[in-house]
Length: 567
Ligand SMILES: Cc1cc2nc3c(=O)[nH]c(=O)nc-3n(C[C@H](O)[C@H](O)[C@H](O)COP(=O)(O)OP(=O)(O)OC[C@H]3O[C@@H](n4cnc5c(N)ncnc54)[C@H](O)[C@@H]3O)c2cc1C
Image (tube, rainbow, N blue to C red):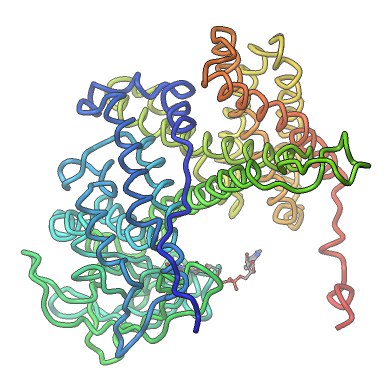
């Protein structure tokens, strides 16, 4: 008989590090206590992190392994989520964690986004599969809040932000994955102004579940006579159950779950095949009404941007918890003798954290997790500055919006010439900020050499940007996608090094004021070490990659298919 899965939390977070980013590196407190964050102070933010962490460890952390082992069950078209998920969903919304940054108009607490991103990290790190259900509902509601008609906002937003109703995004079809523009789901106008929706979507996260009273699907579909490709796609609101304007839920809207996809992980989240209109009775309404026909992709991009930040945060959350668990294990596990006694078979066993290569791996994990998290908090801090400055100092607000625009689409900038040009300008501004940091810190006693290395990486990145631009201008288009990933890696590594060094300069100044016996002494030393490690071991790779780009190697393109393998 197999052993029952134990409800044990294994999630860990380092709240000291989260507070460092918020209050020491990004100085979020300068935005607090005044519009639009009047209700928020440093204490409220710190308490929220402590309480959310406690909640995550007590409520959803213990359900992580259970969710993955039990998975979801599809019976007669209905999905049952793993044991405990329903109660956790209720508890999540009662605690208010999911709506912490939502506007008060829709029932939220209006906190800064820089707090929300860390709350999201905690929720996702404790139980990724569970966190995807509310994550998708939240993202779909944000789209309706941004682009919906007055009536649509009134009907859907508060219900979706409060967890009364769930939500999904439905782009992918069997023949249309990356190639979203190939979508065939159709929308035919009815006499009452609604549209009949017909088609099949696959891989829909949280497409069907038992957590909420209704599920609001955002579905990309093509109206009759609409242009081919992405330009002819409209985003429709398609509820699982039809609802009247006062929110009363009625009959089924002919949306059925055909199957749950088999996956290697996140089994607690139902990734569904959804059939719309198998009986000709599925109706939907364009987000924003008929005036917004064919604007589905730009509307959906808002959600996809949110989803991309969300996926980034998911990555950080899992990596961070893995690092902290590995650290705990390394401090406890004894194996092998220390290198000084390597010839002595009777020497006492050392804890594995005492072995140099284990220390290298731990510092490598620490520097990557903390650097990437700093980028995410920086992004949300810019969003908060936009909110706080719009209408008061529009020039400064525009600068912060430029930073948001750069940081969000690091992953999506190379789809078109136009996007590239926008990005190229943004990259120059970006690089300018790094240049200022390098100029200010290259004489730093401890971190000066590392700052100079950052400067060298910045120059290499600038040269590679020009290289990409030249390829565009000379019609050498095949090289652009070939090197796009490498370029993004260089951007990310340079940005992460910048964030780590910025934190290290602050930490080093604090170290000078603290006796070695203070617990914070070790914390700040760790920040300096992580930045030095990253600058010395990862950053030189940026210059190397830039040099390799200069060689314009085309081997992957030129190689005949038969040359990849003989099978
Ligand atoms: C767990 C999970 C949850 C998901 N949730 C959702 C959801 O909620 N809603 C939703 O709509 N979809 C969802 N998806 C689907 C996801 O968005 C698609 O998997 C994605 O769009 C890629 O499509 P595909 O799998 O068909 O891969 P394909 O498009 O077949 O691509 C296969 C590979 O080829 C590469 N490739 C394809 N075209 C190009 C090109 N032009 N240039 C270079 N490389 C290319 C891709 O990068 C990829 O590596 C989910 C998928 C997973 C795995």
